[in-house]
Length: 250
Image 1 (spheres, helix red, strand yellow):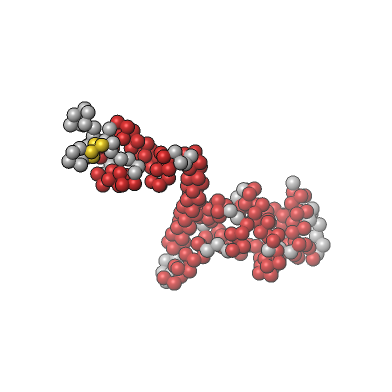
Image 2 (spheres, one colour):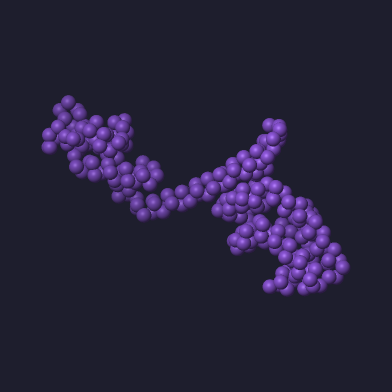
């Protein structure tokens, strides 16, 4: 690999050994990341053992996805590698959540498009808008991680199931209100059945995830008036009825 044992590696030899390009090694030299310990009288770069070890340190950190500027700080001792990796892990976590959400949205849209043969481009774009748009009220009460989970649940359930659930809520709310108006005991067979249906529809949303359930209840509590005006419920009386019916089912 060397011309002579004491001459070190030429840049082309080092590029071949590491799988890098000569251009990349020039760039590392320019940034001060890996500079050859000496040059020949003709100006050619020569890398010694210490240079090669440093290069492999750069490559190891680069393999973790760290930017070159941060790698330079670590090797210079001006930045803690532990702190840097912790920040980088947080960044990667955010990227993973974003990719999960995007993948679920793409899969949901693709499945819906396959079921919508003959639809116009305008219909397609409206479908994409519906799948990818998240209401501001939802964003306030659900974390990015939870939104990714919800996007994945929507993909798993499918658009037809989503439509069925959305259509079921107004009918169920009306039945609960009728029971309230009639003075039905929430602990009765009818009341307990309404409670089971109610909780079943909610579970289609949260899938048994306690965090999603808590965020859903919080969103409903904060936006109760708006939700009631838009969807006709649930009112406080309806929620009280369902709470007592659910307790009776426990």
